[in-house]
Image (cartoon, rainbow, N blue to C red; front, top):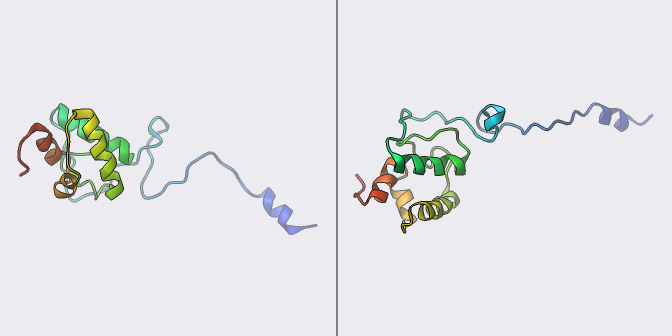
Length: 121
């Protein structure tokens, strides 16, 4: 008898997606990762602009929640994601945002200030 056939019988196939770099949420939010441990505490978005910016980041980065002071790059964003964020912000707010703004001030609070027309602090 061929040993390779016996080995194939022991393979379990599952429909589950393996977890990588974070825990998955419940099945209703199975594609979202929990917010990573950061040096800053979670602060809920305070107004509609911050809520929309946070929602864009959450959807793009597949994170269950994004606080207003969370650093875009510390929660999983990268330079390729920046381009998509800028495009989504342009579509949502109908405003031209330079890409460097995300690198210069990579949190929801700062980006929201730019969207409101206020200087970045």
